[in-house]
Length: 462
Image 1 (cartoon, rainbow, N blue to C red):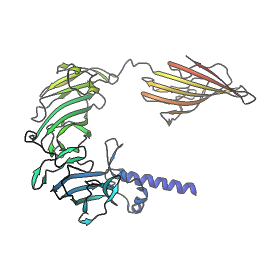
Image 2 (cartoon, one colour; image 1 turned 90 degrees about the vertical axis):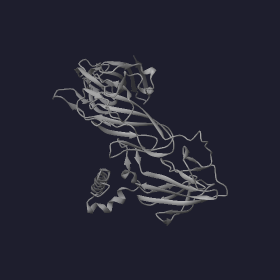
Image 3 (tube, rainbow, N blue to C red; image 1 turned 180 degrees about the vertical axis):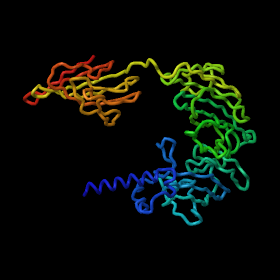
Image 4 (tube, rainbow, N blue to C red; image 1 turned 30 degrees about the vertical axis):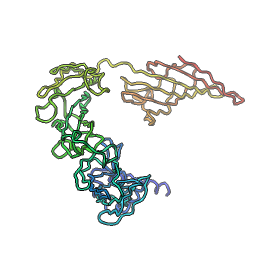
């Protein structure tokens, strides 16, 4: 009965979590009979409902909106909207020296506490919140701390005069004077670099270097993502999003920033074209990473450049680089598909032999690591009998191709680290490597236990 109850709760937890983590589950599609279990399932797991990165490793639960400020030499007032995807802390502007006063949240008085040295208030449920408050001081401070993650600060007034936001990290400068020569026009310059990875499907990483001057503002990046590509990821140190117009929107402030846009191409790819659109720079640098195990291609249509003589990101400078102008296309001529002569598997093997006290059998512990290029099956050679195998910390299903075949496991190409346990009985002769593979590095240790329970170890390597 206890086992049945445990299984019931585990299945219930799995089912509700699956519903909540689906794109529509957070809205409504939970059966009425399960809704009362939602608080129990989400206990200390509320971040499961937050916006996740494209691979799900990061959760984003707190979304500050634009910050508004109106100050004078005796005090000021601030306003900011927040979208909370779970209960948590809302960080307020100011610090212990300049503590916010009369704080309201959705027009109701709020309790402000010292949270890790900064003023903050706690909300018990997800939702949208409007926070406002005041400051009182004897003299205008030189700077004011603003909430982390704030991407846009509207031009604010100081003693009735409008002033553009001057931000360093999370510090908003209030009284740092700016000369007329320092007042810059609203200018945005972009340079685009692309990394083309010839996988299936082809994946493209666009590195968009953005130089911004002028006042903080929301802007649309002067670059349009290609129409025939599916977005995968969009990242920047400032808030960015891909809008309904399929353009990148950014809450910008002066400085140099990098936007990373990752996408994949639909279907087979024989060419890539740089659109003649009026948006974006007139030329881009493209780096091409071939995958010869999938196909070998000849690239043509655009001139090559020396990566070391360009501003291409350092991590791509070992790849062939090309200068592509608007209207030009990079052509891919397929020479052959697949790797007809893959490199041999590359393994290192460490073996430990435990000799039975009666000398009639041996238990073998193997640690096998390396790279699988071909023969995606590892089989234990006779006379050993494979009993258990783990690859990359996961237990594997041991199978036989036929009734009298050797026991083994299926493996994927790439790096592996495997641990195996096997038995040898009734013989004193067996293969040194034991796996029927080419072993580059082999070490072995023989462990014997005497009748007095003393352990003797003999280690060999080669």
